[in-house]
Amino acid sequence: MTHSRFVLATLLALPSLAAAQTTPEADPSLAEQSPYRWGLGLGAIASDSPFAGEGTRINPVPLILFEGERVFLRGITGGYHIVKGETFSLDAIAALRMDGVAADDLGSEELARNGIDRALLEDRDDSLDLGLVGTWEGAAGEFEFTAKADVTGTSEGYELTARYGYPITVGRGRLTPSVSVSHLSKDMANYYYGTLDEEVARGVVDYKPDSATVPTVGVTYVRPIGKRWQFMTRLQYSVLPSKLSDSPLLEPDTDGVGTVLIGFSRGF
Image 1: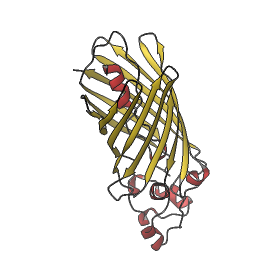
Image 2: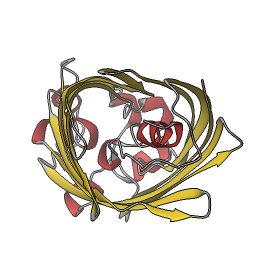
Image 3: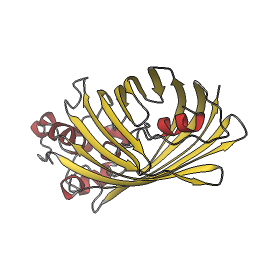
Image 4: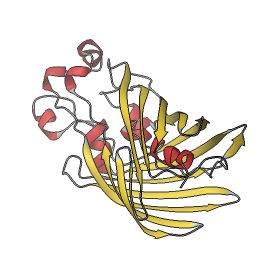
């Protein structure tokens, strides 16, 4: 795997929101790049949080990359290549789900307008997912299917994602438009977008969206700088279904979530 493809796979394994997860996207090799097993870099993710009063969420993200014959590490996702062919691969993965939100980060006034007392809310925690990723690559582009589930008991839910991307060479860089659809199980959607039983017992309104399907469109661009450095960016927008956007934890009339990632990485 070249450093450009390596970085892109890591870039799209990075976190956003529970309703806007992306999965690793492979980019064809740039001919002038030689392969590197290691990469280090730094990026930043900015997302327009749908949660009431949270505003724009900005997180610095270390880009720590390793690609071995079987074992790999791509930012917050690590895994093992069970099958590694020219057109098909099957990976077992462990991925951090950094979709938690602290109750204190939400706006008390905004929540009050939704009929919720912020002091009665619990934090929504991050978690660890385990799962499988199947990838098919060819002249028509790349199709990827990911199934992963929370193994920490945080939400006790799972997520299924199907994604299609088509890489296009633009100058020395690689532009990859993509579309994806993610299905959040009832437990996962209820944990991140609903109200918890202990909150309801304190007097918070009982709201549970149950399972939800979230479509996402995005575009990724990766360009080499010299022989070892890479610039990368990704823009994406996820459309929230009404059962999620109607949550009293969210800003009223929130129809979607926009996310921007920018980063630099160096191969070794």
